[in-house]
Length: 348
Image 1 (cartoon, rainbow, N blue to C red):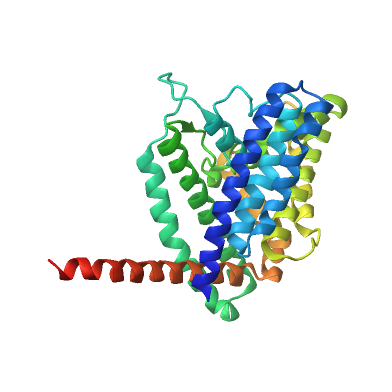
Image 2 (image 1 turned 30 degrees about the vertical axis):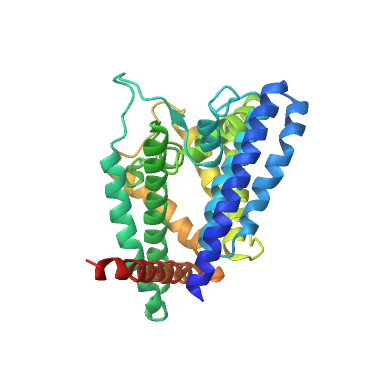
């Protein structure tokens, strides 16, 4: 049964991929023929609605969560920016690059020999895929013993799972982008364990495509009208609401508000941190102290508000079920190859 379920998901993936290509082909033509503004937004709305509905095409948590993040969040925000005549999408891009930039959590850039451009090393992406992909099964296996774990041990296990899952996912995208398009992908994670402030962690180190989208779509417009603090709070609020949506796609449970509260709290503290930093001469902790304080705050508030929502929703059981289905599908594929190769080998 798990193999049949995963096989059905792969069929849905092909259909969704075709739908995304068709929708983005339409969006590219529509954007080229309309001026930025309400008219272009109306023309792009069918693609926006499709992106919000695509996670419902899948039955497993993994595919729902990934499509929700790639398309329902980042993809729709890119389309909204396109409607306003702002990047990263541009109808002048070749169709493959337009589709990949719209549907993947990347910001593409042409390879360059400039010293300012950090060229991606494909071997580095392969190493991350092998390392993270090899560790994730062991982490999922450890969840079988969660009844014997304390709350803090279980939350730490969730933290480890999310870190390596995101690392594996983004490294896989990097490999596809580099191998298929021959383009570089801007770094998406930059050693978050070295963050020395909340602004450093959320804005410059963790899941960098999210702040790259929120800056022009939320932070910039709100800051222009209401100031820096309002822009920061609005960005974290929107991030929290979109995370609630992703959690709904993952676990089919109505939002509790805890995840949104986690991001609003971090946003309020980041705004207060920025206000403190603008005062010259006021005390600032040395980096050797600031780094553990930052990680303790993010981890502590995450253990309080973010991860309990995952535990209540049983995300570990959903992901374990997905993993078992993938293993069963691989086993089924191996048997099919062995059966197909048997007659050939016997004739030699």
